[in-house]
Amino acid sequence: MPLRTALLQSSGRPGSVAENLKVLDDAAGRAAEAGARLLVCPELFLTGYAIGDDVPALAEPADGSGAAAVAEIAVRHGIAVHYGYPERAGEAIHNSAQLIDATGARLANYRKTHLFGRFELQWFTPGDEPVVQAELDGIRIGMLICYDVEFPENVRAHALAGTDLLLVPTALMHPFPFVAESLVPVRAFESQLYIAYANRTGHEGEFEFTGLSCLASPDGTVRTRAGRGEELVIADVDPVLLTASRETNPYLRDRRPGLYGSLS
Image (tube, rainbow, N blue to C red; front, side, top):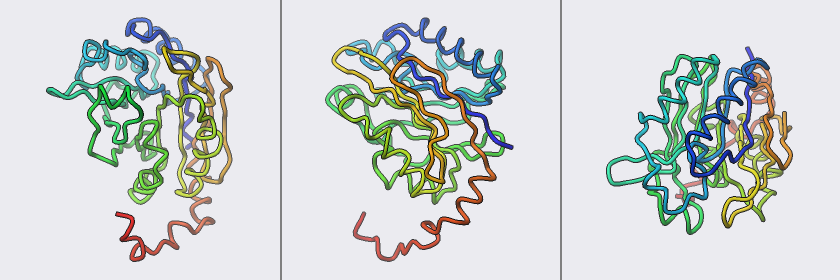
């Protein structure tokens, strides 16, 4: 059965968790009404991305109050939610994303492994677990964040681990729209999986985000594509298409790992 997936393209209100939860709640309701069973939100959506010195104050543990609020939204609308947030773990703060299912259960939490730019390097500690997965409605879900997907090794590791749908909350900014337009669909094709790429939009501090969120398919097509502004886009992750594409495309079968030792 296809997994109808909604991608929220929004920056919410940076610095206000309460307002961002309202945006998420509204999007979850609209997505569920359209038949979606999964809502994917952008990178650091719970707090906003360009929050500067507020990172330590807004960071919370994976089971904190933000997670409880998202779980309540998921249960009320009967939809799984994947959202980005700053995670506090002891003395460290991670750029993280969490998947909560429609029963309110926390299925998986991922910490961004490849930090991008001065802002992230200043405030966050990189994660060290490259492949994080969960099962949702018979689909094996994998998780990366933004810059992570630009490293082909990351996506291929998910393919080899059996990921069917890779969730990538992002904060893609100018001048890099080609990542959303070209690189993400190529990653989906070369590793034979779906990629849900949910971006922020508009200006935040020194950043201007590109939008262009998409659900890229293993057959090389883009099943849905947002524009540049606030938007909720929806498309299906189809296991039948995925199986057929993997049977047709020989990349994973034709690999010769013995030749790739120098890559590591």
